[in-house]
Amino acid sequence: MLNWKKIKEVYPHSYGRFVETMFPYVGVIGVSTLHLFEVKKLYYFFDKNGIYLTIERIGPNQWLYTISLSNGNVLCPKQESKQTREEVELDGFFECFRVLNNEFWFNIDEQHND
Image 1 (cartoon, rainbow, N blue to C red):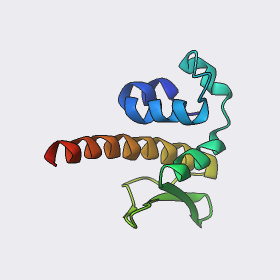
Image 2: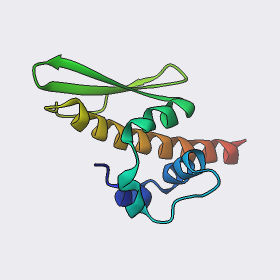
Image 3: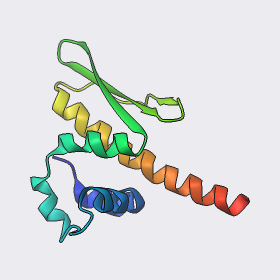
């Protein structure tokens, strides 16, 4: 299960975009309600934001992820292989929230430099 509280605290801008996109008219009453959210729907959310999570099995009980961006960059964060697809998906989605949050700050910096 994703740690939604940590995501909201550490990556507030990507969490805000997630809420706006996935719950556009109702929002989220509290992060505790997100334990009911189907994590696989995050593929749709991140795809819509140009962040593509790929899960790969490299051997028996060895799963890794990569993240591709819409600009063609591919990120291969340092990670330990996981035993199951579900475990590595959670790590990958957490990293996607980080990437999206950093993208927000990068865009703010670019606007100030123009």
